[in-house]
Image (cartoon, rainbow, N blue to C red; front, side, top):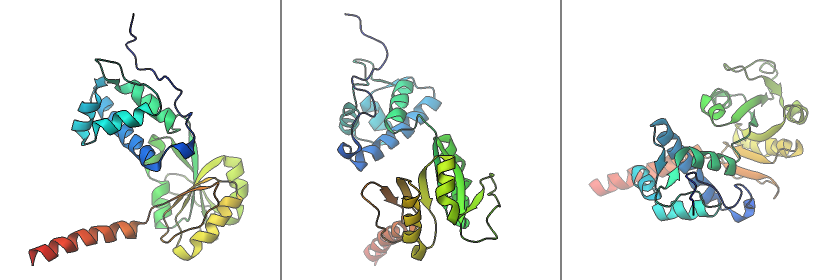
Length: 229
């Protein structure tokens, strides 16, 4: 029997329900994708799960389990074809299409996010900024992203095909802003404001609390200081 020399998937990537896939799994897929990007840049064509795990300090059994959930991508005796597996993972994560993003809050954080080139490289296009301050409306970030009035969120989101919104406003305004985002029909939200937000069940909300992360690091340092005394 002739064996194909290319990795193929038995099941189509992305067919699994989002409810069936844990967030930890999707986070690991993102890590694998970045590892494959490094390997491709280094000219590596094939790699086994064991070699992938050893090079990037991962778990080989977990890699095989995660990938097997979406299909069979490896070739016996060869391992994974780096370019093919990278393409499959981008399809699974929905990165094979351009996703247009709006950032709510044109302060220092919002403007920095809008001008970050890494988003575009991964398929995320920052299409619009929004703010309540009239003296900011109509201006642009350094990379050319226009700042709109927050009152026009629904209209601009529909016109620009916004799929993801990023909240970068002070904590007291975050929940009302989330309400405007939901009313605009946007179903995926990344929140950089501290504190817990309440979103409808059909809206996916992820929060990144930088203060909590810094406090975790502070705890680590405090334990080290205590041990030295």
